[in-house]
Image 1: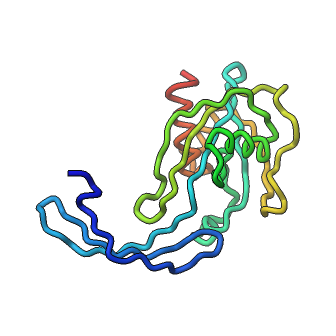
Image 2 (image 1 turned 180 degrees about the vertical axis):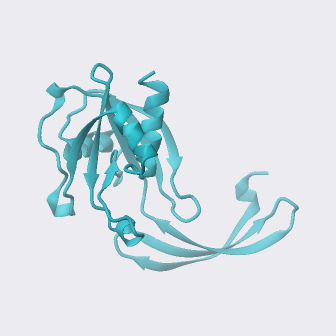
Length: 193
């Protein structure tokens, strides 16, 4: 039996449609014991995204960005977030979008990007699936200062960090962004061995 055989959608109500969509879904779900149970869930649909970690094996460095994130601030985080370059797909292919996003945010025009995995980041409430990439970089690939797009509210600082320092920043709480932690741990396990 597939999951689709265990779900009967009864109603989907649009609660908000500003930049993204917030809906309330009422559905019946067939539990493991065979009983049907009615459930209601709010679902935030912001589309899918991509994230990328540029790395340099020779210098043992990675490129990250630091920026303001209002939702983190609203949840009591009183600092800028250190993150991997990332962005929404906006109907583009993941690889094409992450190349453009990485250049806008970091200033690096990356020659070869490699997809390493996909993940749902908050599957209990958000539909977003992220495509995770890594790419080797060197100084010759820097084509601008980066910093993002001011008309999109971006005010981004580019950071080049030793991989060991970036990993230590997870442990001491300076890096708290989930996608960034996942990419740094991937790098530690598979790239910087």
